[in-house]
Amino acid sequence: MYYIGIDIGGTNTKIGLVSKDYQLITLCKFPTPNDIINALFDEIKGLFNENYIVGIGIGVAGLVGEDGTVIESPNIPTLNKIPLASLITEKFAVKTRVDNDATAATIAEANFGEGKGTNRFILLTLGTGIGGGFYIDGKILNIPMEAGHMSIDYQGKLCSCGNNGCLEMYASGRAIRDTLIEKIEEGAISQAKSLYEGNFYKIKSEDVYRLALEGDNLSRQVIKEAGKALGVGMANIINIFSPEKIILTGGLSNAKNIYLEAAINEAKKRALKGLTENIKIIRSQLIDSGGVLGAVFLLRNQ
Image (tube, rainbow, N blue to C red):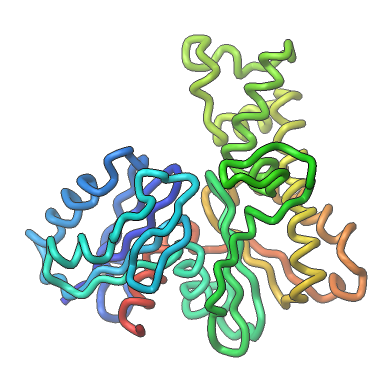
């Protein structure tokens, strides 16, 4: 008897086979396609053909209704207004639950990761966009903690959500990529211009981080500024919620040597001193598996 856990992000989707005692048996990761529904059907069907599946838990980057409909996913617009839970249930005839991806990752941290034994922590998912979850007194708060859409510059860049100056526009993986491209277009020098046979518009945030580590000054500058922007957002979170921990997960949290260092330093510099003395800002150990495990946990404990 197994469960399927799915984590749908703006860049990558992860699908895992999970045992009843929350052991991750297999994990498949692939770029999130435009036709994500049929891609999910194909992957799920393959797992059904080989295993006895009793339920499917899904985490999606975006706002999700109580009935499992994706209300809005700024970074995966093809899922907007899609009744995802109903579609999956009708197709495979098993119990299905759909939640926000950060909610799933947060509940995984509380039960299996860095949040275990912590009374009050906030999780931030750092990827194409930025999401969040708040765990306190043994439960996750049922709020749409869209941390990436807090405004850190009210006259700043226009976000896809319609607001100006959203944190995502400065600190996300997409922001890192777009900022580097903009600077190259303006004439800045970077090794990135030699990637993808000179078509630097194909560059990814992980390419920028790798170039930064290899000594590319522009890439390092872009990564560091993105980290500082994240630090501004974390300082706001610390001042408002005063968590014991902030746990950082998602693909972008792998950029720990420049991005996370800059973020932590900036957060502790900007937040009220009395609130930063004991807070721990740490990187998750469940970066690839947290969303999958959390989605299954929520399914089984709904």
